[in-house]
Length: 411
Image (cartoon, rainbow, N blue to C red; front, side):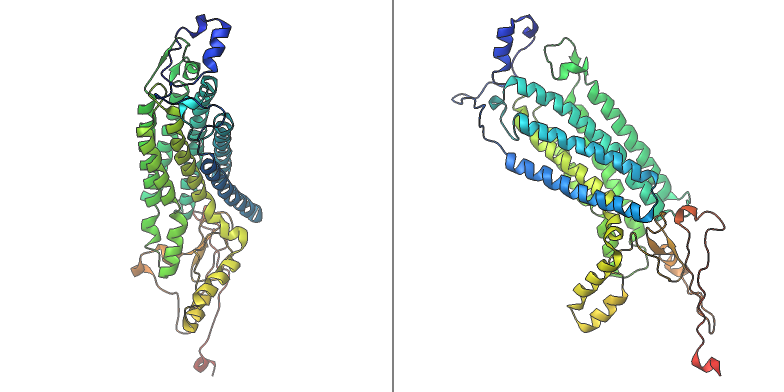
């Protein structure tokens, strides 16, 4: 905003209203301000908001329904609810901008009084963004600890996950405080005539965006080493990796947000209302993807894994009859939240009484894996306890021992 408002409080009410109802930025030569119907990008903006909000809400409801089925919730589930509430707050701020001025509207087509409201909304949106990330990423990491560290072993995965959790909370807590007190007093951010000082907002946003991208990358890469060491078919490996690789989109949005933080024209630097919209949408898309990383793994339980297995088998059967017979016996979709099947040394890995079934042999090195089989007896063991109780000696129970004698032994 290039208008000087230092003397604004000393003006008469009439002069103040004339300034507030005028353009927030002097238009270029030969351009006349258009306050009634300026060129805008409202159609694309509304599509992005509604699409992200719809996808995230549907996935969130499916996860909530899966918790209802299992009748058990964990700390990460409550963190996910808080993250979603903050995410809805971000959506509300974007809808407010739509009603005030519209999206991608040049600042000389925005009244000063509306621009000051947008400046206040920018602060609130940033706070909601930080709160969403504060709750969402720890929820993801806590659930991954429950999945990949079922015995609560203090291994490298466990400690790296906790370092990321602490780093993330400290980063966004600090960013929230810095955003609120970027100007002293805080209301100087949207009332520039108030006496006070403001720090470099661009430096703060770019720094947070950089560390945010680094954390997103580490979270995405953290489980991949374990996933690709699991002893399972290639189709199941790809399926599991796909579920967790929704975070690739989050990383892409984080890159876009970092770029537009770098090139955005902040208050007093130029056409703020136009350039800041791209930053809003990249940030909102990133929030949606992060929440989907947390919500998506529970979708199979909500809609029924049997249906997913049948659909996968049907798709594979189109290749050949031989492939069809094999696909019916295979679990194409990665086991996330489903019923326990009786297989050699299986346990529930998500710790909620029915979250995931992963074979112990899949998490062990290949050279240690062997079948518990005698001369004429095959032993199949399934564990009925959750991974949350896996550290207790009495956790695992052999639920079924099946003896199968060869025909020549019966005589």
